[in-house]
Length: 184
Image 1 (cartoon, rainbow, N blue to C red):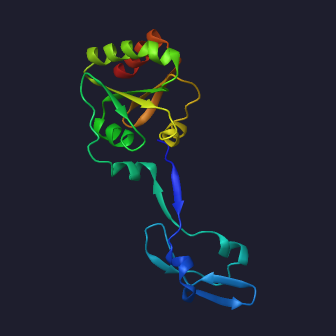
Image 2: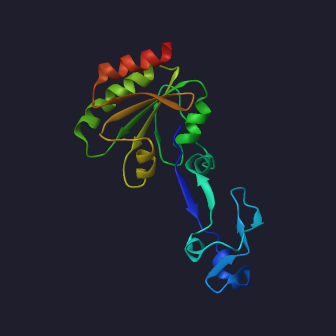
Image 3: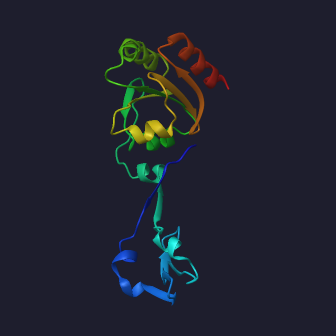
């Protein structure tokens, strides 16, 4: 599973000059930084001026961030609209069920043509979770994380991992891919 990692800089490292020390006239470094777990620790003062400029931050993966999304539920027999915040919690909640994600855009003609057939497919396969993601600006980070190149793209996941992909409005290929993953 691919994870998007974003860095944020704790404001305390830049706003409090008392945390900076000088071991030589050319090197200033913070006395403390925050490590990956969020605990403060000492940093050797021999770090060069260039390294001092690098931001020390807290790392959050998109999976952790999206687990905080409340109310993320897929309805059996229906296609559920997801966002960058609700996708991973729904995939996690699906457990070992097969998950099919339709990645589309509002302006895409083939996406509009295949949408009713995708809905019918969800009504016939109650043991599969059917999702759809509008690849607009708001959901661009998730679309990029999942490696979308064209729309529509269907990603088939099992146990949280992408196992098959169907690009284009190829309904028969999609049905075959779903059946293949279900039987494996």
